[in-house]
Length: 376
View 1 (cartoon, rainbow, N blue to C red):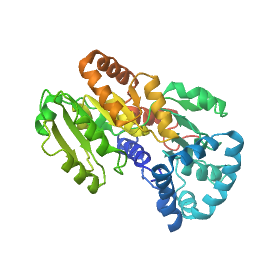
View 2 (view 1 turned 90 degrees about the horizontal axis):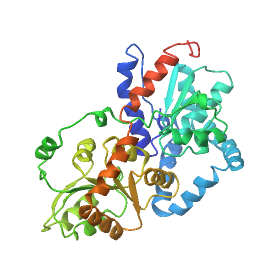
View 3 (view 1 turned 180 degrees about the horizontal axis):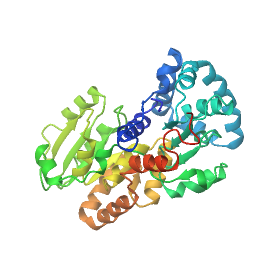
């Protein structure tokens, strides 16, 4: 179960869903967006409020993120969320009561709160496992009904401990990503198939699924690099941005490919030498699975900034203040390739491409289907 308030939560749930058939071949498995069972107004405003805030008033989102992580504020806001969720998500509660699942895996905190409330009332006995999809465990992820927390890295365990979660309930298997990111690919073959130059330093600019951020400005800066580069620009679901970038790169000496929404990001990451991106939890995890160094530009205050700090702190990438600084960083790396090799090794060390399988195999070993904690 996920909540479609950002592409990352959905992609993590889809990664688990694709793997369940291999680990639980006899199970009846469903993938569910919580918002599909919410009132129309809640379904529309829940993701839209988040997108509006991060795009127009990111400082306000950052303030709310940090305030709700304070234990006292979290307790108060949790009370009001319980009332709101109870009113707008009645159909979701009815679905859970009807299905009485043995196991629920979530990649967002909204279904955690609703299912936990049903467990407290002893309406269901489902095992509830939540996969935290960012590199900081915000207080909203924590609920008494959660039986197991899957975290991206062991470094998050002390944070959860401080929120009252015992270490026995925490397993640092990583954020689940599509199994295609675990496959070893032939870089030369992909470059040839995609019409890319075989021996050109390649920069990947990824704007995220919604096509937001200073992509045009970043493209302008990369085009100023004196040494010929290969530039791949992914504009997401933003045809206006794709058209604008395509106009900008006309006549350049660099080799450029401009894409809209893509379903082969694993291949683009495989052929890239460096990626300029937002620091979403899934994007960050996918890049590390591909051993791809990152330059993070303008992380949104809140979870993206936390992800960025993790990446930079572990030596898997850099944070820059503006597109010009990103370009200067790339120029330095072209002159000092040993820096890039070191960061690539750090990204490889952190990557957990098999997280989806590891999570499900652990759950199967610990509980199985219809085990002693199950609903059957």
